[in-house]
Image 1 (cartoon, rainbow, N blue to C red):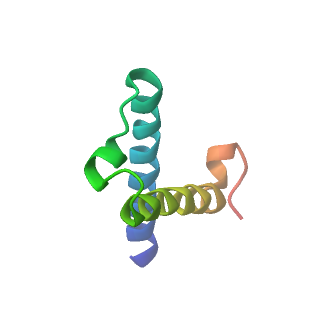
Image 2: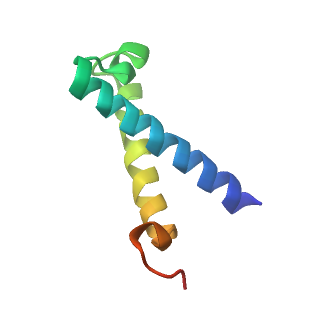
Length: 70
């Protein structure tokens, strides 16, 4: 149960991070900075959580990379 919850939170954070980068590239609009304040500790933590989530998803879901899960 815990891992399923953690997987879902990590996946949502990765998707939100990707959408934010898409907004930055297409519209020069950073939603994270707008919501949390540019250059704040809260903004930094949001980026850290998105990055850690991406590593977690990549490490725990090898099927996304075309590899079999052990």
